Length: 139
Image (cartoon, rainbow, N blue to C red; front, side, top):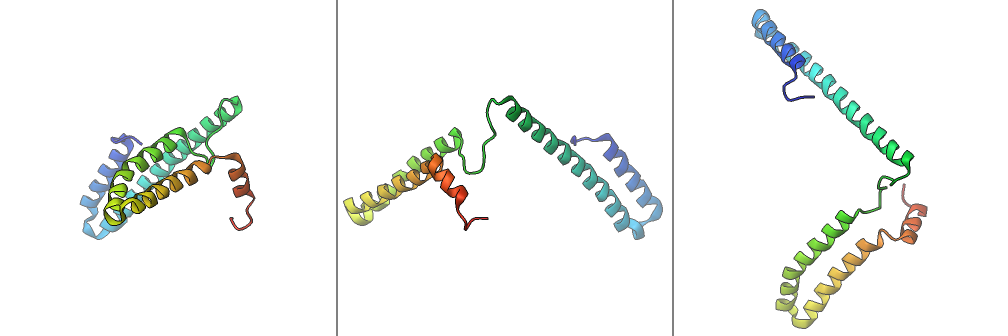
């Protein structure tokens, strides 16, 4: 739906004109009618976009070039961003650890940072993914 949809503009003009003729007694009914038309229009636009995206994904899979990312798989951008953020956050965590517990605090802070990054990296390993798919306790 475009920002300036001529059909919706006509509908709004007609609704405002009808309000002038009918008066404020019918205002809520006119507004509800107009909002229903807007809602139908949005639904149509969303449906078209979803169908287009599904068709594009099917084309990519049919060509066999690359499959779309499945849930649980992380892209390079996600992994890079996670690593960059963890390194940025490592600075204040290291400072807090050193101030509060000297070398032991620094070791604990970095052990936590390495542990979180290791778990995040392990999500992409095939044997981890396979066991996650087979678990009975997940729906």
